[in-house]
Every structure is written in structure tokens, then in C-alpha cells.
Image (cartoon, rainbow, N blue to C red; front, top):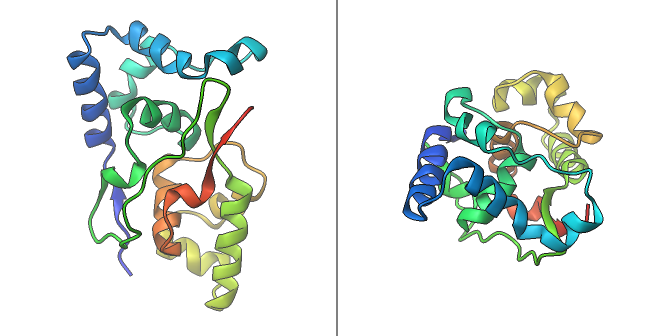
Length: 175
């Protein structure tokens, strides 16, 4: 089974295009992205992962975490499935959950792990066999159980293997 890839270059190009169309510098973009959750941010002043310089360097890095990407995907109004290339499983039209100024979008990685583990067992696969299919190490999959962060490309390959939309594992939360 061939799984699609997350086209990170297309993601960062779309982000940059939308930034330029809005006549925003990278730090202005970071402020806009962060201000999507302005009420929540006031309650959680210790949280502030948005840095214009870091966002500007994403294309050079070629990857990001699934949680960090959600801030940017929310700002763009796009679902991660829009950036998949290759043989994609049709999961229907995907829209990110609505999140007001008191919420953020977050991946529920323990729920993703539980779904993967259930499906792995149903298919009578070992973690090593599944890791070969997904294209990672077994520990990257088993670590999802308690993870707060994971690579965006990995979680998208996992959702495709499950034949489920990413939004089955994304919620608007207040943390």
C-alpha cells in the first residue's frame, strides 16, 4: 500500500503566498496567527510558540510539528489533506474545526495512537510491520500514545493509513 506524502514545499509556498497577498512581514504574520486565539492567550501568557523568524525559516527546515502546523493551517483556512501528494485515500472534503478566540486547534495524539493500535491489531500487524508501511520506526508510532508533538508528515501518513480525515483527531481546545 503506497501512502501519500505531505508536500511541505507546497504548504510553505501557500503560506508565503497568502502572507504576501496580505502585505504581511513574517513577524506580522506571527502576530496574526497568534491573535487567532487572543482570549485564550490572555489566560495563558506563558504560551507563545509563534516567531516570525521561525515561520520564515520553515521552508528551509522542510518539516514542522503537527501542532505548530495547525496554527498556520487555521490562519490559511486550509486542511492538511490539501497538501497531500501521491495515492490519497478519499476521506471526503475536510474542513478544520471552528475555533473562536478562546480556543486553539490541537491534535489529539493519544486518540490517534488508540485508533492506530486498534486497526493494527485488527489487521494482525506488529508495530514493526506497521512502521514499514508508514515509513518510520516503530517507536515513532508507539510514542504517539503519550505525545504532545509529532511530525506533521507522520500523522498525515497515519491518518491516510487509517482512511480517516485528520479532523477526526483535531479539536478546538483551551490549552
